Image 1 (tube, rainbow, N blue to C red):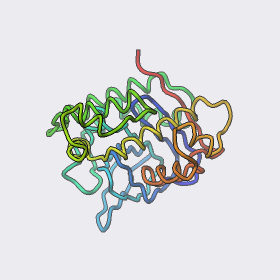
Image 2: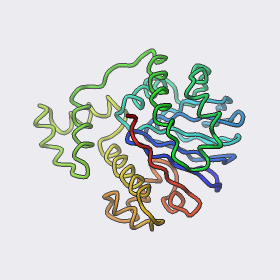
Image 3: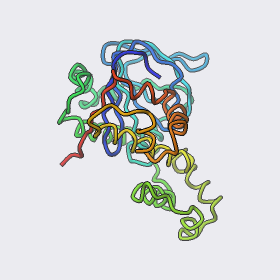
Image 4: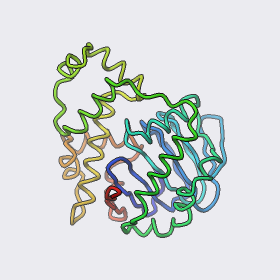
Length: 265
């Protein structure tokens, strides 16, 4: 995904924040919208034949991108959360990265930029969770077309997350919601632009990274995979490649740091 430089991944209940001094990235294709910030200058982001230059980008889901600049702060909210839905609403009519001056007006974004050196150190940042909450409020406020998801889709997402790692039977879930399995799948994709299987993969990846945060020693890829309820290292590698265009052997490298972020309050 990013370059070979040391990186930090801040893992919270509802989001992941990647921080790196990398100068370029390629092949980034995430299944959910993302917010990228260039803390030390502008980034040039390419998508196909188009090119966008700016300091703050909203990235639509499922679009491969490459770019270059000076350092990066990349925010990935977990799917079906308010921040993810707000970012999706802001980008759903675009197939390329969006440079948004409105986001740079957000004081929390300005704080991320100003305290980029502190974030790189990989230490607990007591202000971080509150800052991401402020970004969520800001993005929601500037989003012109934010519609609530189908309550049945939201109910399934909440159920899967609350009961993880138990997934239950999709047919049983659909019956309780008064839908067929096929209709429930359609409603879910329509609400979140994400398949149910992709959402479950997100939950597994998040569990893997959360475990990595709490581990007292560096994990092998197999240990991380089993902790995240994957069948084996190959399944973790496949999910990681599809979600973040990177292999877990890179994410779990010796130069990579994980920091758990507690909830506000």
